[in-house]
Image (cartoon, rainbow, N blue to C red; front, top):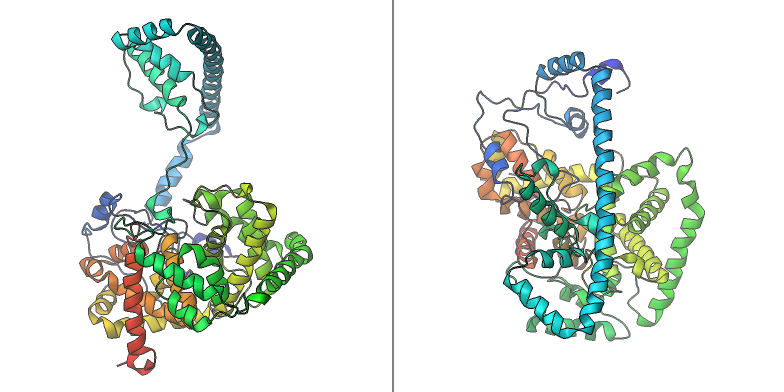
Length: 551
């Protein structure tokens, strides 16, 4: 977009108008769509258009698809007129006056906050003195309690407010703009209530269901059943031998790996660790030293002219990785991810760093953190781990991610030919296994590349909760060419899984919103196991007869 003509056409493509109102599209930075929370959005998206809907230009090649894809809906020329009118009405005096008012109001709020903090500190000191007097005279304390129970309702509030917390910034309080206007007495009661809310002890943020990583089914069954305990014993017996039978380990791992033995099992199945138990410790030490040798050799060059673009893109993408999980928003974790991705990009110049690879680090990182902790990982503070443990997690995640990408690197080379081949194979496969779905998407000119590109680029990580991805990867690790070949059949089974919902959509916009925001928030082990079983059935029927894809 170096020319002026291209700049003008950035927001105004030559595509037809998209009918309906502008909808929130949950893309690369957002979790799977939950229809229970967004019922209104679905209703709005399903409204029939007032006129005959226009269809986007049909993309025949990847480059053409990329050139017509825009981050904004084309809403016609009305926007230019509105922007021009707004520019005429606004002037610098109005802007400065508004800014000064905002600054003045903010200063007043800070002053009131300081006064409230001073009053609260004085009240706390008084309460401390009163508590000392009450400890000396228990009889008077009982009398005081009885008086409170009869009618003094202010004492509990004052006492409760005295228990201030250093984490008051994380509170949820009603904004001043939403507060009801009433009498001074009502305002005083509202202030007391607000003051009490601010003084509540800090609670950890509630993790949305989509971001929870507990190994549990959606039915709410206990995490460790008798059957799972038996499977865990089989894993331990198999791993305890001097030479692990990798073929038997793959068979056992196909239907899921217990959390307790998942770290070492993934390392063995990925080829990072040898089957011989005596050699494992020496191999781990050597590979970890080798990785940090790469850090010393290459990481300081991240700001060099020929590497700064790569590092800048990595630095932008890391905060977008699983934004709902506090673990990945910690500065130390983001620094680990930056080092892993930058070193991988430097060592693989044929592809370099491509957006989407950042997602592939997260399952390995979470699994290897579990090697050192017992509690849940979503809110875990990695700074509580020893430095050596963090270094081990970082190095192990790097090498296992590298092993994964070695098998699918053509997904990330120039023009991403591996992804284009797999999307084409997915289209042919779906046309054979569910012709109704295939014809329905053809009728509304939905190209598979428009939604399945992300499925291949991110290995369905944007479509499934992370806990489901980890379970899915148990089978991918156990399956021969799981990431490069079996993933195709998983995507086909995943698409057909939503057959009913797809056929109910009657326009291009509704289909695209559905396919980019499939409701998997509540999925667990049960749903993933059914998906994998169907994928295996498709593989058994079609993998050894590729000509069956075509008619």
